[in-house]
Length: 164
Image (cartoon, rainbow, N blue to C red; front, side):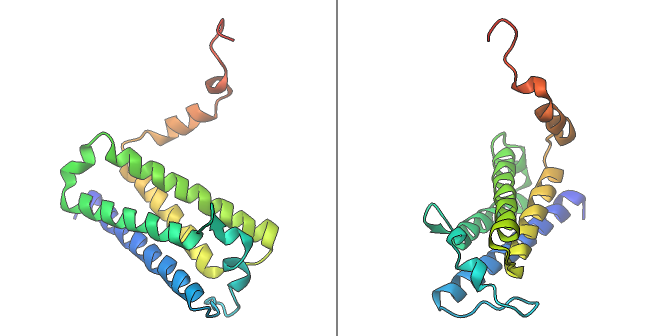
């Protein structure tokens, strides 16, 4: 099995795990059941905080939507590899994964610095977002070291001479 197929299977499995996790959190909240973390304490202070909603949408619903899109997209790409060459699909998936990864970093920072409470399930979801983003980055044809370096240079944000 070549690395293209292995990476797609890996991405699909990670996203499916994230989908199950987000659905688990959602159903526990809907049933008003205490969400017990694998390490044995309650995740309720995190999953019921003011930060558990974004634009009045529960973040686990956003997770369910995101992970479903990723599962369907990478499963489709696995079944039909020629779709990967389309100009829009791969960058869209990578962009969506980047947004999810950055949002999970934000939510992790909220746990650490604002709530000062931890939810292991949420941290697992954040790790899955990171895995999906970096695996998708590896799979993409983006020259990401060059892209990152050029994005971080001060000159890329300055207007051209004579235009300011």
